[in-house]
Length: 347
Image (cartoon, rainbow, N blue to C red; front, side, top):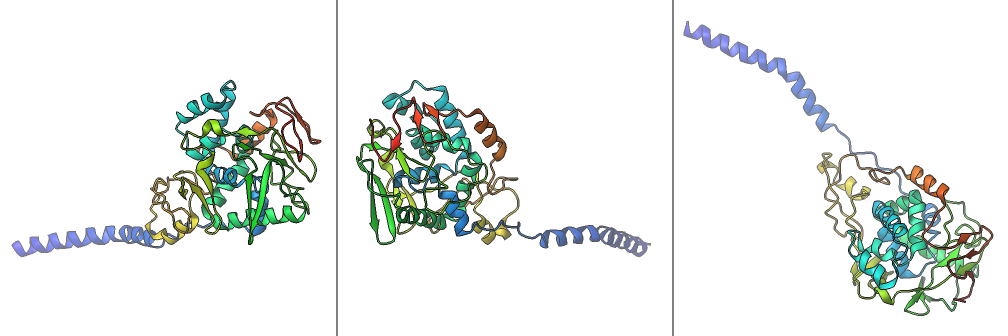
């Protein structure tokens, strides 16, 4: 009798195992055959050149700030809106209040140049693409900047002026303010200034203070940067290591801690470790790139939570406001926010 009971118990256990085995095996099979996420194609050199065209002719330190800040598009939006809400803050008072904000140093640095910050906000789709490219193709982005500078130089539009100094070191073109205490943001049509016309970046909107019609470069009022010298995010804390194609912040390679973009190369190399619960706080420099240890669920490369790129860009463009004073004239001039003219200084 005891033997019969043991046999029945064993049969019942085997039946339960066999009944649940298909589901268990199917689960294991599905998990083991899960493929790595499909990675979007990298942008071509020509696409990167078009992407950097609106900023390639800016002084080196300003380009460095823009590339770093483009990885924080939500903070750019916050900062530009904050600037619009505090139009009376100037000079040292502005720096004191900006310093209290929780933004990345690169975003804080751009408050020194309201028209540049406004451009990044109003053209948020382009900004997001720039940030994505900087995260995933940093060295190629740097190369694209140099290619565009050489094109502008060959076209006769990138030269020494009273506002800026242009120096060539081998294949590298360096742009710096002529006066280290005053920075002029060059204004130009990024689709005409480089010689052969470029296709306009889809949805890119000309913002007052950084755009003039025609193939030449102009300069508006200079921005005194001495007021911001005491802050750790000020002008003199930024630069380029062109040899290693890296943005420099405080004498070190800048590392972004943004949660916005996924480094597709790193994700591809570590696809076996990807389980959908990741967080990008842990960046590490790999060839001056980014190495996210984690990525937020549902995050997509080239996108950021809570914003529709095109919708934001289009709605802002239709409003047409900017944090740089003066009216915009498509033919080439501005008025109200300081004199603007081609090739000259303040007047």
